[in-house]
Length: 495
Image (tube, rainbow, N blue to C red; front, top):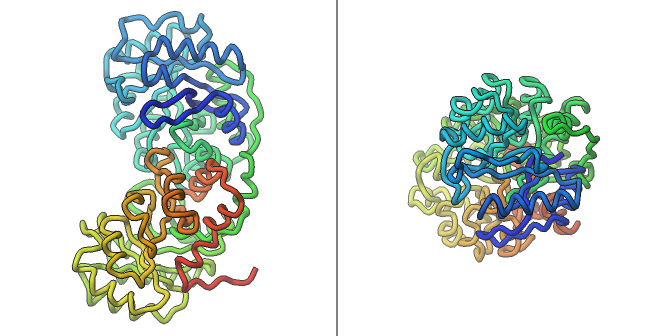
């Protein structure tokens, strides 16, 4: 059972999601039914939209009705929602036009009213601070609370989500909040599958992402079925139904891939499987022929020590290929690093994260000597964030540049022929990572599969691709073939 999707037309984007199309998409994810609400209730007026929800669910019992309550319009009575047929109440204070916050007294009263009608409360969270507010204001009411994460970078909020769940046994967690490799497994070990559920957030998100995360998790099948249906069936007083894997899941996992963005090392965030052994294991588990990677330490801490970590990992994982990290603040040392590894055919390019690591654009003069040298090295590729990337690519037309997280600012760089774009980001939201627009502007032949593992499980990006329903030739190009042109130094073993 999907724990939260919407039907109707979104006024901001014009995106339409008729009920039949929503049902088709969720069935492709393996969901036999879905808790739904009208977009009209979300973006315009709750009463009118809730009536639309009841009419739809009366016509099609595979849809389970959720009423939307707006705290800013609360007058002390949420109405006889249970008697009308609703199975849950949804509150989305941060939605445009709704106003309010999770520490509002009105929202606390809505929670108390939901208790009186034996209705669980689904909360749409989008800020890290929301979790503490829920713990302080809403959980003490005793209401049954289901926390849905409705933006990207769930890894950055996971510690708070887990803290709330530890402190408040009446709280359920959206499993899509743990997109890291091993994230779902961590939640199951910590809380049990009966505290977890799944919500696609269609049409605002790529609906298959959380389903691929749960399907790829190395957990007992009974736990998987609990997350996919059992938890919500119990919460909503419905009989449980067995859920199938997403359509095409096995084929997409097994398809040969060149993953153009893997990492070794980690930040101070929850990454359950960032050790070298786990990273190497995931390369094989997702049938990755080649994983192109670099060291996080080399980018953000010690360039020389981090590049040595990359070289050591290449010895451990034969499918891996390396990028040499460079530092614009240490030009001579960067040249020395290039000298050290340029003769190793397993290194295929250079990598920098110019904005987050150094506060620069790639067009900054401090990068010029490094880029000029790479321009004299045939077949070497440069990977970087989009900041200043367009200007640098225009100045160095002989270099192939890869725009990391390519849907960031792809519109301004779409006309640059020596630039390729990877499609990984930490958000499932279509508005924040518009892959169809990327493909339409740059052409499918310039789009690269990338996961950003282990910070993001490869299953997360594969879920986006599954949601797109691409034709087989385009899918093969993105998963594998385009990378061979983006990184000419790649050496593929015959298969």
